[in-house]
Image (tube, rainbow, N blue to C red; front, side, top):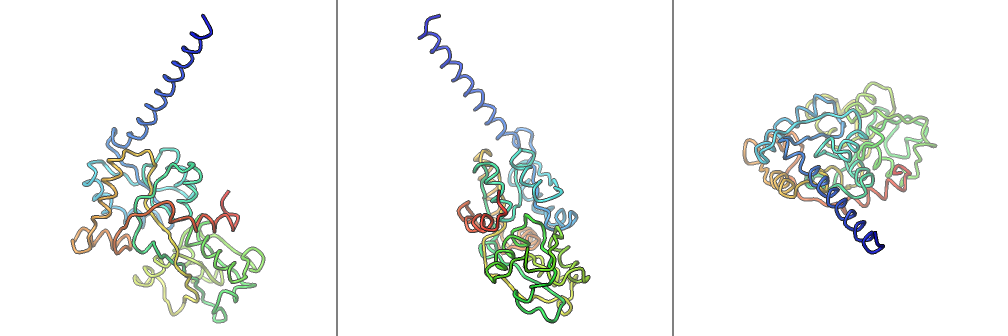
Length: 295
């Protein structure tokens, strides 16, 4: 075989390999549609039963909008939600801002945030306590504090960031920090006297107060953070564009004036859903890197 012929054969083989790889990629992207199932999950920031309850009407609505069977798959921890999406075991995930950043970094930019609640454009965290002498962040020095999950935006990353801004280093200035694993568990730890204070998602706090699962006279908010971008619904970037559009359009069409829309929006603690983009989470990525939480 001549040198020029060998080069031509190698070039052809390379083209064929690329074409096969491309076909496999497209096949993977179309998997959700081809088997008729859209696999959905969410970070476990509340109990599994509560997450299932909140998702059921939304899942039924998305099934009608996409023509697919929608299955909710609970995960054991925040990291599992990231790995599930990146490794194609899940098609769409309800992420917190930090878990979205982790998924984006882990996948080298191969995930796409579709929508967020209007409330997520200026989300906030609250610090709570039962201790009379704690009235500001600086009072936490020498005390015990519960965060939620280590990967939680509103239950750890942003509260930690605001503590550092107040010249309070959680790792050296506090007597002890603990990770409860979920926002409602943080409230239980504070109410039960296991820790002096806790930090959590303001939405969960307000829901617990409204449903009388916590007594705000016993457990009180002593600090509310400034606003920041938080939760969103994210898919892999290689999802079929037509399916992405159907999902996005379905979220944007939710209307609180209809019975179905009102139920779904109330369960999601949302006024409405709005489009979002990766750039919205740049400040969270910076905060995570500054706190040494993003590897």
